[in-house]
Image (cartoon, rainbow, N blue to C red; front, side, top):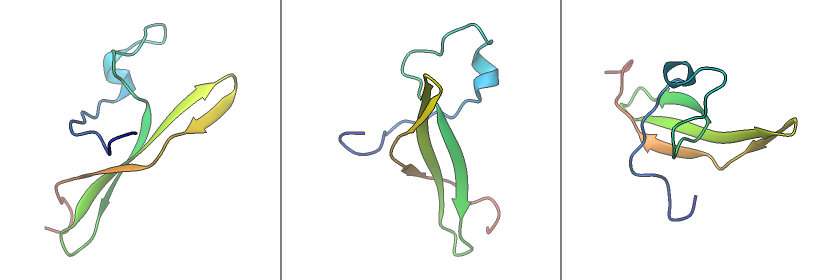
Length: 73
């Protein structure tokens, strides 16, 4: 993304907002999401945007945003 990572991210499972035949809401980006945490209390959420077109997988740039520690509190 140009200009750095997005400032406002809402994580929503695709099964929560659409059926098979409906289009995603405007501004939606499909991404794989992984929560990462270190025992010193640092946590982040890593996002890998992707699209699947014409039987090909295209990966976007890896993004990360601060996240709340849950395991190593």
